[in-house]
Length: 328
Image (cartoon, rainbow, N blue to C red):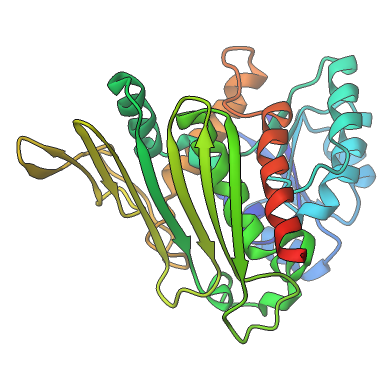
């Protein structure tokens, strides 16, 4: 298989490395407007060659599918161009609805897969929580706090110089874009939401740096979701409880627990897991691998994707309401 990766920043390089781990025979070509990034990807043997434009890359490399790993606001135009080249497309999360109607219609008309990343749906801990709650079958409540100091997200670059510095694709919205899909998948559609936002840091952001959501799901579940880019320690703390159920998760595979028989018991969801030391302990590579494996299986016609542009609109609607609350 021949893959084209558009965007050779941190995520593009990660996807290339993991794709080669899944299939050593895969041939990867790259596209990036920055010559330094193209050279780095070649030097690291992540791509066999790289070009400055999609047109050049498609003509020279003749790929079978493409991955979009650029900043979110660039996705719509890039996806459209790749579909025009009759390529199945995998894209990182979009955060905004730009191009959704046109690109989904174009992909449908051409019969091309349009695969939307939602990596938390591939975390075994979130799948365990979903399955346990569904088996429980009674109303539950949850409390979920996700936060990390924004300058620590990419220590190698200034936070104002990549997409989290933009009001439309800011850090709080990024957190919600990552976590709302699995919450909607596990607890169901949201029928009611109230929002409080605030700015409590000196980061000088063009959006509130904290948001707290009170969510009521149609399933009867209720949750408090707090997202921030202020917490000095990277945190992902989840607790879910009902009459006869109590789950705890601290965001990594070593910290998922269920309260049973009067004590807090560890739940082992991974035989082993891989972690990139550049990121917080709450980020494991296994989910990215499983997501790419799902994409490859979709290309072979063997599986369906776990998330979609159509499903994502529900998450974007909620994110838009949070943003509107912050602008009032």
